[in-house]
Length: 151
Image (cartoon, rainbow, N blue to C red; front, top):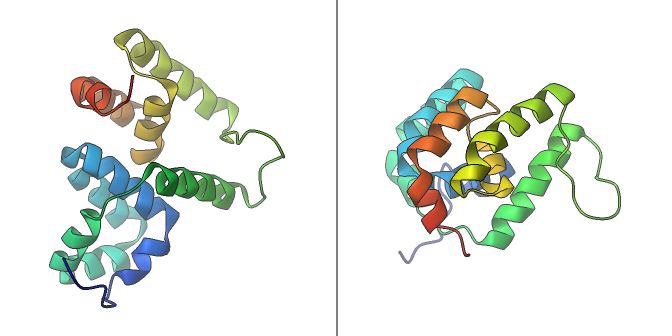
């Protein structure tokens, strides 16, 4: 593609959640319908805009996401949810006790199967913190997730 012309969906590039979503969908294209469904529940206007500009949306979704872009988006999304910057030192994912319990249960399923915590967190966040959806995603995409990770 040659054009960086500004389109109706250009603003999505600046939204950390969209970068995370793009990364997830590129690793697992079958996630897209679920993510769009969730988007429709949370932001009907945005979903209408995407539907009206499908070609642009597909082009945006196919733009590569570097690990740096993903990490930056992940941290920005966490900060936005927390409304304050993380404490100095290694960046920690800020979650409630109930959410921590969900992540722990997902790890109990995923870690013995050769997936790491990063894969669990990515799936959990991509599935809008829905434990059941994340578990299904991890189990249904084991090989793809493992193949997509450096050893």
